[in-house]
Amino acid sequence: MATLSSNLVAQSMDAASAPKWWTKRYSAVLAIIVVSNILLDRVAFRLMDGEVLTGFMIGHLLAQLFLMGLWLAFGGLHFMIRFAVVAIITPVGTLVTCSGMNPSLSSSAMQALVVGAGMIVLGTQAIVIPMRWLLGWRIDFDRAYHATPNYGKMQLGLIHILGLMTVSALPFALAQLFPVFPDEVDREVELILLAFGVVGLFGSFPVAMLVVAAKRKWAWGLLAAVTLPIASYIEGVTLGQVIGFGRVVMWMTNAGIAASIFINLGLLRLVGLRLFSVKDSESLAKLTTDPDLTLLLDAWPVLPDATRSAIVAMARSAGIGDVSSA
Image (cartoon, rainbow, N blue to C red; front, side, top):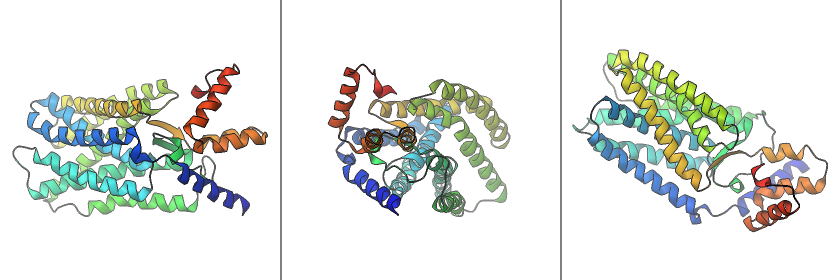
């Protein structure tokens, strides 16, 4: 009971001391990037000409869906707030993008694109969200936004199992909103979503981790170098037989995915975006019996920036080295 109470108190402290995100520079940068991407999407469809540019822009669009799925799984703020933001941006962004197409699409085709985009976002979240619960992974600008969980690494509770069942069911529930097409078109759409969604995530996830991870970048880079060609080949086989997309389009699609992820996450990385685990401090605390060190590790996420800087400066002056990179 005491442990539960201390965890609730710690979480309350985390929430109370977390920086006001709407006053931070990275919030403005994130908003500018989102709006810029949507405007670029609208213009891009008017400029597409030839297999190379077409494939590249398809990859750019898919990358945005994957990034929203990653934010939905690993981001800060309450889940319902993240879900509401994604639920607004996905259809609005898709409709704005479709408005730039020439010739214009029918209402059924636009509905299919909106639903398909939502399925890719929710499907991405469902696949990667177990890493949030098992490993404590977060992708955010400041650790202070995230409370330390009261369960260890590789541990799941009943709430997580129920949550996984729910998020896994969401893409299939959304699929029920698909407009009615002839049977042969339905089969084509399903294959396209499968190839562009699951296989696209297979190639794009290592690229995203390469940008935001602070450690083992070489491993993520090597994995991306393997998965991107495999994703291009699989997509070429499936989509090439269904709608006649050649290998050039598929290779350029995955090149567009990689480039868009690098640019978008790279810009956010400059203002502090990173991958971290909220369970690291808990694991470190178990390695020591020193109560003062344990207290410092537990309090570190909620300490003011000035206090953190002072502690780091004192550690460096004592000859310990650059502890900020540890």
